[in-house]
Length: 219
Ligand SMILES: Nc1ncnc2c1ncn2[C@@H]1O[C@H](COP(=O)(O)OP(=O)(O)OP(=O)(O)O)[C@@H](O)[C@H]1O
Ligand SMILES: C[C@H](N)[C@H](N)CCCCCC(=O)O
Ligand SMILES: [Mg+2]
Image 1 (spheres, rainbow, N blue to C red):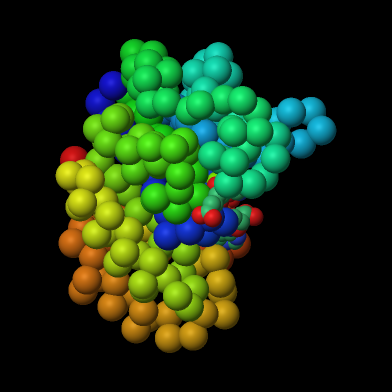
Image 2: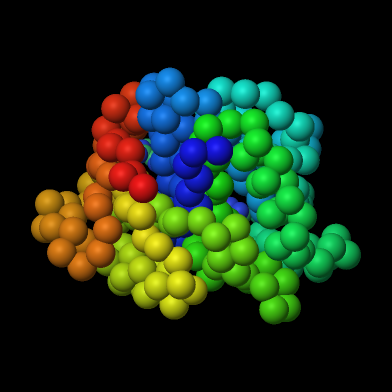
């Protein structure tokens, strides 16, 4: 494995999966093999499929066992620690770290999507930030560009730093095409986030087309 990143977001439903898939395509376009991972997923369809996992698998260049891509999956689209408690499961870092290690043996790049926002609880004394720390990964922050994102992005930057993790870059994802003062908001984030802007993903652009809007992180 040459590169691996933890994809954090300013919130749930702001484009972590969308950006993670774009990054997988961007690395693949450089001739690297790339795998997506979703350690914790909440919400499945009638066939038991989680749409984030399906999207990451579709954007990956290799087929690997599902339990490596997604060690923890719950049916209900609710806060994952609640879904886990109801299922009688106590989530821990170790199975995720082990699965991540296996993925790393098979691909040049592993892109790990978090769950919800950066501090989402996973168990009584364990949250998504702990998971990123256990994996010891640099973080790429996806900012869902809409009113309110400045505060969410800056809080997340502080939380990443507080866990001793590196913010390797950030992606501005245009979830709200009608966001007012987009350019000024983008400039505000560029001034206050201490990491390179990897790109702006336009609204309605995904997959390989979105990859064309991204620069790969330097490290
Ligand atoms: N740039 C974009 N243009 C249009 N739609 C987008 C864009 N980015 C994300 N979306 C849509 O917004 C929704 C949320 O995106 P996505 O599933 O990637 O969010 P997420 O942060 O991964 O959410 P979760 O916390 O559930 O994992 C999806 O329907 C997705 O298709
Ligand atoms: C179900 C959803 N799409 C995500 N998988 C989980 C989001 C958890 C958010 C918890 C919270 O911060 O309130
Ligand atoms: Mg997602």
